[in-house]
Image (cartoon, rainbow over all chains, first blue to last red; front, side, top):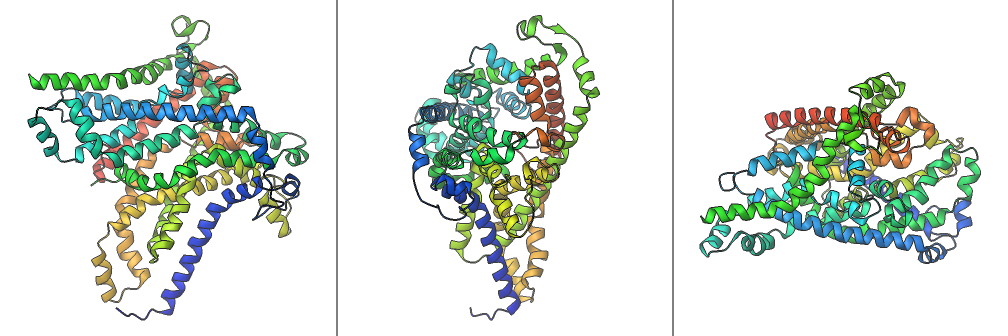
Length: 294
Length: 296
């Protein structure tokens, strides 16, 4: 169909593309700026010469990170946390979602357990009781304190329950006729069919564990047990914000090593950037699954 | 008989999860008893002295309480409103784009900050907004005096709200975009035949088409009126801006874990949790009544 477009419509298009381009740029720029700083010479950064591209390109900051034993240790703690946390929640999510996707008539008690889960998801007992509980279990300074409290991700479980309920019932009935038990049905029929939703919740769980910083700060007393985000919080962000309030704020912000900080930030966000393409394939589906239902 | 073995196995599957929930969610709920005690961590929950509502009375006498309560609500409400409107406008703009590749590129970029932690983003933003940072350099180029953005009680809340929108608007766009694709395209064709321009189509078809989604999101956000964003504020604030940006959650952390006033901190936190639970209850009831929304 050939259509002559009015001048107004074309200029509207130009405005829209320009605005969207500008917003996209403003989203990307702070991240790009940090990358540029991390590859620049520190005196060029302190002088304010870096805006778009690295000035006096060098890898000094990254060399320093590689030889920084504490950073390396924190990176490993984070990896360990992600692996443990994601595996445990994967298993628990699957094990809880399957029985709870049954009707109450097939599984008496199902509705009561559902309400229990919802109340737990919605009521927050607060920071102090939570901290005291974990302390009383003697779990401070243990990796398990960063993993077990999040082992049952109720919201994810509800997503998976909804997904299981949307699968055709005939599949399970066919299995039942063949004499399959519940474990067989879960592992050989439901699990292979739920790749999209399990991928979604697994990726969410990886990002959650990688990004968590606060529990590391309060539950780990020794800095060598900090996960990476807690380490970066203490060594980069906390110092940035205390500088502001101190008397000599102007000189201090010049002295602090912006290049090294930027490099630490880049390395810390790198894993998220690496899994982002996979993440993007699934989360749009995942989020609409949980949010809008007819 | 077969049914009973199935049910038994269902319970077996649930046991690990339920045990973990009891240990890490139910036990802390019992721990809210600290709010009614002069809690001493050496004595523990069972032997600490019970003081009734003393912690709550003390809380209402503190002048801090008023400040943190007002800060929490005003920051949260500003974020809620901005996070409803900006993604909506953005989704409408994106919906007008016909070039698929451009649309996909924009979406890929704007979703990204949602997945980065506030530690990282605060590290980047506090540097950019610092006294010698990029923003002040830009200001300087236009002949303005440098501003202490992060230490100013007028600028800092604005930075909190705008950086929160900056991080989340892309992600919040997803739900609007999903609703926009649900609008019947024959409506647009019919309107075009009747001579309606793009502006008229937007006003008479698109907006009414996604109104239920807007109402639903607005209703559900009621539950967040006391969530002003701990992770963000904790990573960006400093004592100079406490009067404008100290919120319930940051206050509970400082009073409880730094000043070891466990009873007071638990009381403040408990009050917040109860009010939040009531608000969530109201919002879910409204959402299920008017928008037929169910979480399961």
